[in-house]
Image 1 (cartoon, rainbow, N blue to C red):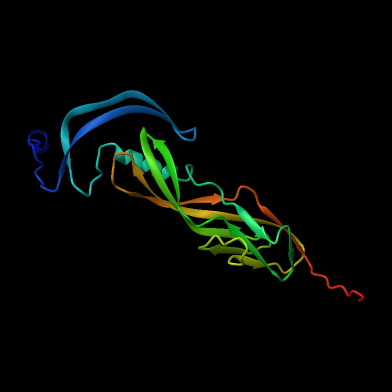
Image 2 (cartoon, helix red, strand yellow; image 1 turned 60 degrees about the horizontal axis):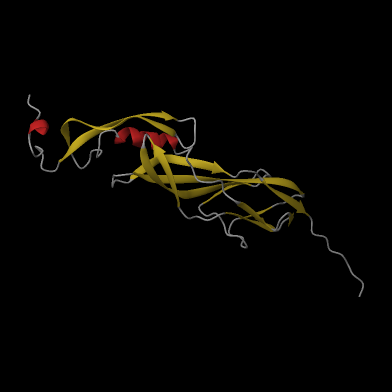
Length: 209
């Protein structure tokens, strides 16, 4: 059967678009961050061309890039959250202690995958708190310093190690392509080191006037 895409000046389907095919050979070392890419053969146009519809991936080879970004999102991820505890370092039994972990704003990340420049938009979705006394909490907000938007009330005197991890979702674009690709799953980024809380009792003292 004759390949109509190869010989016709337009695609058989009027909604399809004709593309030239270019191939670049690269060697990628994924043990480094970011990946180390060595070009083995520069871009070369291949014989013929292809017709692709609007629902298909725009260029040959982009599928491999998309898969690589999907699987690598947990490695190329946002920075650790910055945990703030108030009051700090001493809190009181049965009094709310406030916590915050940065902002809830998206962040922009860049990377190079299989020779393609990648722009990632990472959006924080949930903050997973562990207050160190057996109590955990999931919030849709990072809390705000100076408030009790995220708070916990300790019921016993003691020293507690507090941690928080952020769940990030993401989308990304590939240099030279207009399509925005969603990233499946989430990247979980924990705080670099636990925050320490010393919980003490408030004492009332009588003072002679």
